Length: 607
Image 1 (cartoon, rainbow, N blue to C red):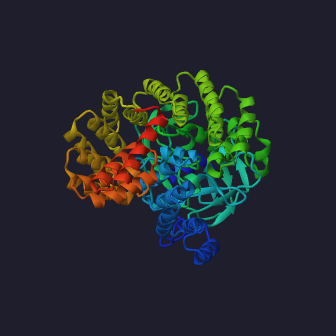
Image 2: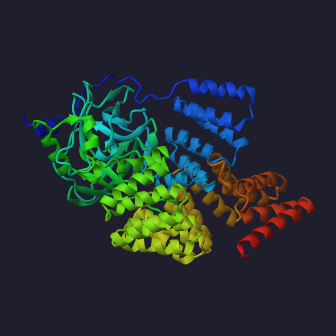
């Protein structure tokens, strides 16, 4: 039988398990929620109990309630990064990606480097949750380990329960579980690795009558629109990322502009008609504010066709236990690569560093592995070790912009902004069509008061991606800093239209309106910002500034106090607080706020 012909003939299997059934039910149960509720009954202000309840609600699929519980927890634990992380997850499940990004950014500001990294990877302008075609959604699967934890993604490729995923997702494992759209879990029975040349495997299960996707008959052209749908960060709902083909497939690898997050590995890379053009293999490891995750690699169509042609041959499939015997066949089949994924998914940093180090000894010239070890070291706050790996990756692949972007993030984390700017400038020189690099560079130039250069870079960013709310927000900030008040307002308004749920856009709009003394409109924009990002001090500071501009000093005061509580090192907040205290005749408190400004100046060496 010509299996490839059969694979390509039927575009989407029609064996639905019921159109009206709920897709992707939550994996959690009510027991943790009951325990958390009992703890809260004894002490309603216990931050740990509030946090546990928020997490339990999220895992039970009650996402809106989880969001509310997390926000309630923030009232008693505003400096807890874990609460911000739970809030981000609940917002992500509701499709509120801009707010989720803000929550993760806040967790990063509070010291959680992992959340900061994930916030950088999360792209509201190119990602969405909950708007996936139901036929495609039913064809997706979540790959789980023997404990039921999400480790990657994949899809059904036959009615009889055949799964396609990335080899590194299942590398070295003795047991692999497949969870379908209805929450049913099937153990993997056997695996086909093909000739071990690609990061892809076929998995047989006992599942029957599954909706499935089919392989394209040829490689996509440059510029072809693509989507990748999978389960990053072990979330319970499929997240879809969008982009284009960056370059023609070469040596079995398809380069794309689709942003990936940890856990999307193995996801199908789909064309407009839902055909499989590839399998997500490796995404950017961008971290902190300067990274840029618009580059990813997929196993190409040609490589997948070759794998599919191997499937009907005698002995093509082996028991799952053979995975542990294939670790020397290729880096894709070495569990150290899978372990690197788990660094983010399960935070086993020390174990992951050791595993990745072992595989680097076998493949010392692989820059991607060096960057993955750098990430494990970064998660353990070993900044010098992470920096060494990033610089070594640059030496291994001097024309690759990725190590420069990664190094930029490390340098930012160690307060070396000038060096960070130089690295991201090098990345931009190597990849001048990369929107995210342009945006990251624009932000850094803006924060370092290089306003004219920031303006030029921000203009490049919106030219490269006019749909990016982030790009328009950066452009607004650069225009504001260079005295172009009306143009700054226009750019901020564009940002809010592009992404009405992006709090940064509203913060920037409020700032531009305050600067042009349109305090009434600024008040409205700032209120929207505080609603979308209650943990962002800039939102509250802009709200307070608008009230102060309207001479409503008493109303401005509590918002300013709240802003300084959220960000005690924000000099502008203490300055405004001192001014408000003076307006209200509270001289001693004004002097105390001014003393705080002086202390901040002394700590930073003056400004």
